[in-house]
Image (cartoon, rainbow, N blue to C red; front, side, top):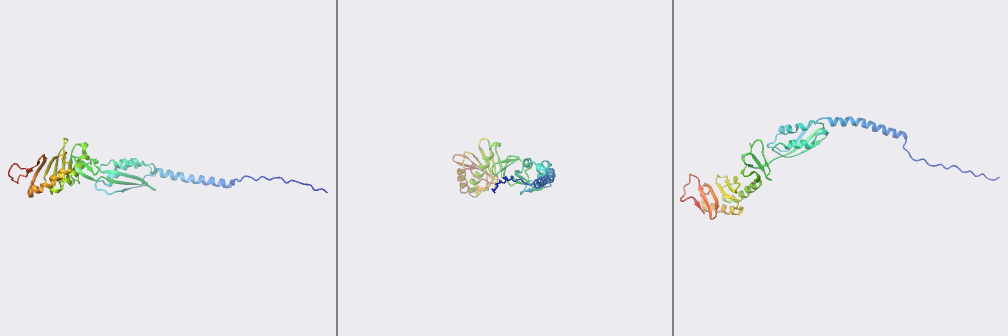
Length: 256
């Protein structure tokens, strides 16, 4: 009896597919997460700022003044705050030099303020900083100890530099620091020293030349140097001295 050969049918493997139940569960979880998150995000967007944190050491800017300046920029939700607008509002205060603003989760705004640090008074109503930046506060109270500088408005940096140079150059005279400097548009300069003596010169006289004069004053004038009311350096062969009224000297008061 001959054998009957049979072929078993070929079974092709089915492609792997996630189970329908898992897909449905994942979709439901996503829907639930979105349903919970959307109200929370909406609440945060609309939630007002709950606190303003101010950082910085202040001598002239007050916290109340700063908060009043930025208040109108904080009347929106936490995520809607325009940080640049807050910074610009704070920068509008005359005594503010720089400001950094950032959000602090979950409802605060951090405002770090750098206050201006003047090194001199400028003309009649302004102050000048170390880098020659000029600003005009509403009041000059509390800055009486600063040196007074006067000059053309567009020459603040040059006048500040000249003040520093003359302060160094005149130090050997022993008459005190330069507490006031006036520079005219034509270049004439009046430097008033701490002891009340005024030194008159022009901008053609450099720091080295002024320093040489300052070293001569004590030797030539002796103890009377501190009694000079005015020392004029605008002479090619020396300098002229005008004494205070209480001092009597022979001649016309000139020396070289």
